[in-house]
Image (tube, rainbow, N blue to C red):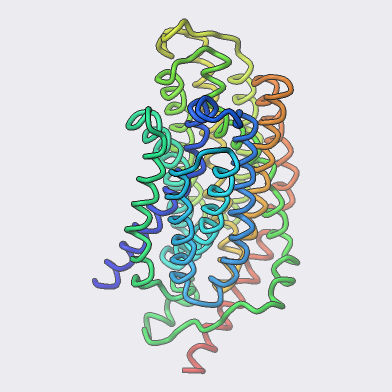
Length: 443
């Protein structure tokens, strides 16, 4: 019972810290109109560059932190990262120009890189393979839905006239929760792998002592499914453009008020929420009879989302001054089409993450997730950079249409993973079965 409570505390704290991390990235687009008016050296494109650099910094730091997360106690790594993020988040509330904002946001991103790979590794040790799609779907919801909306709620609804308070609140919550990480217990590595569960249940004192080694890095990259799943970062470009510029697109391109733009964001983000739940659970349900269902779903969903997103972007409509979003039927259709497209797209992440954990050994997962997150971040950063450049050079519809076309390219990487996944999965199961015997012999 005590161990179960400790697990819940661990998950709760990590979930909150990840949500705050998403706040830090997503609140900038919400503050964009305010910041560009307050500081003469800022514009929409420059803020897009900050977001892109933040994403890359977080992912780069994550590779280092993820590697150490496979060698030492994972909670220590998360605690160090969260402390760094807390400091720079609070400092952001004191900035007075673009350069200071840039430095503080990059500093916060360094710490954020430690949390996600460590959390995914821990969750894989808390839940069996047939439940991970659902669990990672919840993770997606917390880090996208709550993160996207939370930053906007704090910035635009609670404190619309004082954006600095947003950073004080986020930094303060992080400061309160970070020390808890150091004292919480983490699960045994491989605790929920089917071939190891019987061993642990027979003798709870047994432990999985395998740690990552430098020579393992080459081995991980040589696994074909790893390469296909990691290099499939182009499907993040559209989402990054929408997340960064959705509110300003609605306000500047369609004359939406802040309230109308916020309502549009809620509807769109709701699509991601529903998609993560539906397709995450569906992947788990079918997993028992089809081990390749996660990569099959990724392949289908990556193609299916594009048409709806393209239609939603290119419909022509304009709201009257201070009018409700629902006052324009075409606008409602456009937002609903985007929402449905992102509903389909939202189902990719939990299945993608689940597939990566299934084809890697427990002592490799933090490293692989951080490496996958780095390439994933390249896609998001590229989206922010492309969006900022094309919006400044052309206009919003051109930028968002161009970005959405990248969803089709992701199909190229998903298809071959269907052929290689089963072989890599079977290899991992054979290694774990062998280690289950070795653990008992060592004892």
